[in-house]
Length: 102
Image 1 (cartoon, one colour):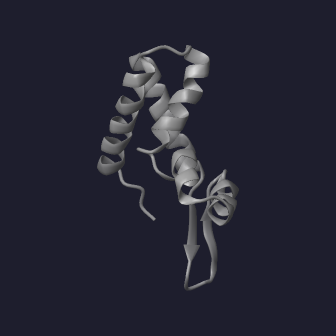
Image 2 (cartoon, rainbow, N blue to C red):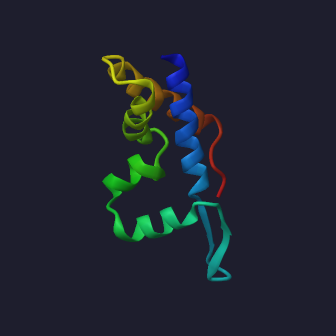
Image 3 (cartoon, rainbow, N blue to C red):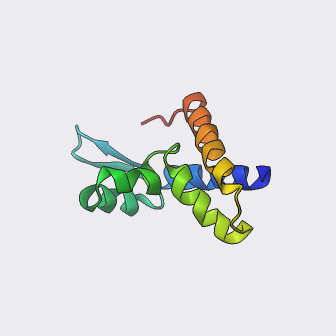
Protein backbone atom coordinates (compact mmCIF):
# COMPACT_ATOMS: atom_id res chain seq x y z
CA UNK A 1 0.00 0.00 0.00
CA UNK A 2 2.82 2.42 0.81
CA UNK A 3 4.45 1.66 -2.54
CA UNK A 4 1.20 2.50 -4.32
CA UNK A 5 0.92 5.77 -2.38
CA UNK A 6 4.46 6.80 -3.33
CA UNK A 7 4.10 5.77 -6.98
CA UNK A 8 0.78 7.59 -7.30
CA UNK A 9 2.27 10.71 -5.75
CA UNK A 10 5.22 10.59 -8.14
CA UNK A 11 2.87 10.17 -11.10
CA UNK A 12 0.84 13.18 -9.94
CA UNK A 13 3.90 15.39 -9.66
CA UNK A 14 5.31 14.10 -12.93
CA UNK A 15 2.15 15.03 -14.79
CA UNK A 16 1.84 18.32 -12.90
CA UNK A 17 5.37 19.41 -13.80
CA UNK A 18 5.27 18.07 -17.36
CA UNK A 19 2.21 20.19 -18.19
CA UNK A 20 3.58 23.54 -17.00
CA UNK A 21 3.62 26.52 -19.34
CA UNK A 22 5.30 29.86 -18.65
CA UNK A 23 3.89 32.90 -20.44
CA UNK A 24 5.72 36.22 -20.62
CA UNK A 25 3.46 39.25 -20.65
CA UNK A 26 6.36 41.46 -21.70
CA UNK A 27 7.23 39.41 -24.79
CA UNK A 28 3.60 38.29 -25.27
CA UNK A 29 4.59 34.67 -25.94
CA UNK A 30 5.31 31.39 -24.20
CA UNK A 31 8.88 31.48 -22.95
CA UNK A 32 9.05 28.03 -21.41
CA UNK A 33 7.01 24.95 -22.32
CA UNK A 34 7.42 21.55 -20.76
CA UNK A 35 7.00 18.33 -22.74
CA UNK A 36 3.22 18.00 -22.18
CA UNK A 37 2.50 21.75 -22.35
CA UNK A 38 -0.31 21.28 -24.86
CA UNK A 39 -2.44 19.44 -22.26
CA UNK A 40 -2.51 22.51 -20.04
CA UNK A 41 -2.77 24.92 -22.98
CA UNK A 42 -5.83 23.25 -24.52
CA UNK A 43 -7.23 22.01 -21.23
CA UNK A 44 -7.36 25.51 -19.81
CA UNK A 45 -9.33 26.61 -22.86
CA UNK A 46 -11.84 23.76 -23.10
CA UNK A 47 -12.17 22.12 -19.66
CA UNK A 48 -13.86 23.47 -16.58
CA UNK A 49 -11.88 23.93 -13.38
CA UNK A 50 -13.44 20.89 -11.70
CA UNK A 51 -12.09 18.72 -14.54
CA UNK A 52 -8.68 20.41 -14.84
CA UNK A 53 -7.72 20.10 -11.19
CA UNK A 54 -7.91 16.29 -10.83
CA UNK A 55 -6.33 15.69 -14.23
CA UNK A 56 -3.27 17.97 -14.23
CA UNK A 57 -3.61 21.27 -12.38
CA UNK A 58 -3.62 20.60 -8.61
CA UNK A 59 -1.34 18.00 -6.99
CA UNK A 60 -3.60 17.49 -3.96
CA UNK A 61 -6.71 17.20 -6.16
CA UNK A 62 -4.98 14.83 -8.58
CA UNK A 63 -4.93 12.10 -5.92
CA UNK A 64 -8.57 11.19 -6.49
CA UNK A 65 -8.26 10.45 -10.21
CA UNK A 66 -4.71 9.09 -10.38
CA UNK A 67 -5.15 6.79 -7.36
CA UNK A 68 -7.96 5.07 -9.23
CA UNK A 69 -5.77 4.84 -12.34
CA UNK A 70 -2.89 3.24 -10.43
CA UNK A 71 -5.38 0.85 -8.81
CA UNK A 72 -5.93 -0.58 -12.27
CA UNK A 73 -2.36 -1.88 -12.01
CA UNK A 74 -2.18 -2.69 -8.29
CA UNK A 75 -5.73 -4.00 -8.05
CA UNK A 76 -8.83 -2.48 -6.51
CA UNK A 77 -9.47 -3.04 -2.84
CA UNK A 78 -11.02 -1.35 0.16
CA UNK A 79 -7.56 0.16 0.79
CA UNK A 80 -8.39 2.72 -1.91
CA UNK A 81 -10.37 4.55 0.79
CA UNK A 82 -7.08 5.03 2.64
CA UNK A 83 -4.86 5.52 -0.40
CA UNK A 84 -6.72 8.52 -1.85
CA UNK A 85 -6.51 10.70 1.30
CA UNK A 86 -2.91 9.57 1.92
CA UNK A 87 -1.82 10.55 -1.60
CA UNK A 88 -3.71 13.83 -1.34
CA UNK A 89 -2.05 14.65 1.98
CA UNK A 90 1.39 13.68 0.72
CA UNK A 91 0.92 15.78 -2.41
CA UNK A 92 -0.25 18.74 -0.36
CA UNK A 93 2.73 18.54 1.98
CA UNK A 94 5.20 18.16 -0.91
CA UNK A 95 3.67 21.03 -2.88
CA UNK A 96 4.04 23.31 0.15
CA UNK A 97 7.61 22.18 0.85
CA UNK A 98 8.72 22.45 -2.79
CA UNK A 99 6.55 25.07 -4.51
CA UNK A 100 6.60 25.29 -8.29
CA UNK A 101 8.37 28.50 -9.20
CA UNK A 102 6.79 30.30 -12.14
